[in-house]
Length: 110
Image (cartoon, rainbow, N blue to C red):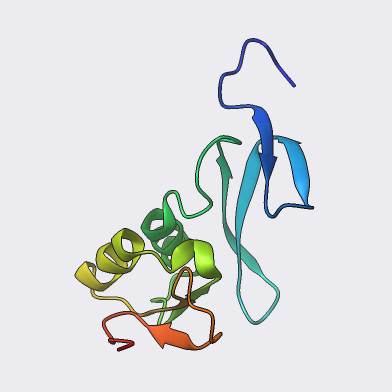
C-alpha cells in the first residue's frame, strides 16, 4: 500500500477474494500469447479501458480481433455499447443475470 498513490487501494474481486495495490488487465489469446496488458487502479472497475485493450491487442498481433470475451465485469451496458459502436463483437455475461447465459453484445435477454 502507498500513501502517495491514490489508485493503490484495498480491493476485492468477490466477498472472499481481496487484494492490495493495483489490478492488471491482461489479454490472453487462445494461443496463450499475451497481446495486451494494462495496469488498472485498484479502486476502479475491472472493465476500465476494455476497448483500448482490444485495440492494443490488434496492434500488437497485427490482426483484427474477431470476438472479445470477458467476465461479468465487461457485461455492463456502457462497455457493450463502446465495443459495438467500434464495430466489434463482445461476448460477456450480463451483470446480475442469474441464469448464467452468455449474451453477445447487441442481443436482448428479455
